[in-house]
Length: 244
Figure 1 (cartoon, rainbow, N blue to C red):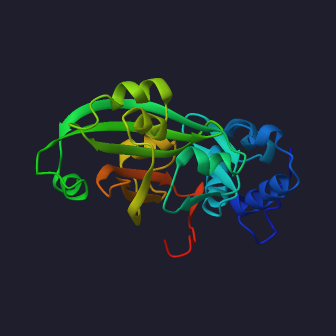
Figure 2 (figure 1 turned 180 degrees about the vertical axis):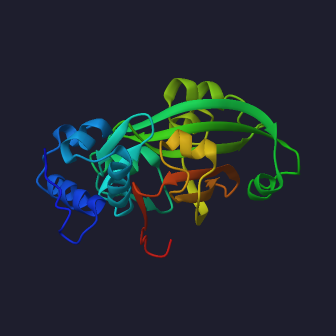
Figure 3 (figure 1 turned 60 degrees about the horizontal axis):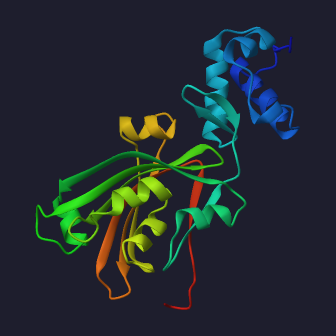
């Protein structure tokens, strides 16, 4: 059992946080995963509430990552997500030695809302193909996204995505060999319950929202994506591409 000194002048949970931080720095957690709460409580001779408070403090500092239903892990280094004329999820991760993953959550053909119609230059209520995905890096959830495409042009996109698992490859099968980013709007906010659940994070932890519009070689809007990134796992990097 690790001893907690009641007369040290520091609250118990802070002492535990300091001890756990030392363990993290020394690489003492096999596989980067912390023991479960009861084991930590027994180690320090405190209740589970005290352990939770210590872990929460380290999570706020970015040292630990708490994933609902999975456990507590040593936080990975932030992933640099590069925003440029050609922003590609898989390429961004592969360039940093990460294994990208895409999980298809849902596909639907729906009437466009005002924002989607505006960004895709469609009439209000025009049909769009809507693809909901969960993106991951090395098996850890990184982004939750809703992608919208003009349905008249991309009726075959759902089948292509189900087979390839890649937006870029699916667009290529639909005749769009290349596309570029027209604009990106960034916003920090709290996640919805659904977003937090998919990302495996607390609803009180901020996420970074990216609202993006891509265009084809002729300048025609082809894709609007509303993507929510786990705020403690990614940082946005704006690429200098020579003013292009």
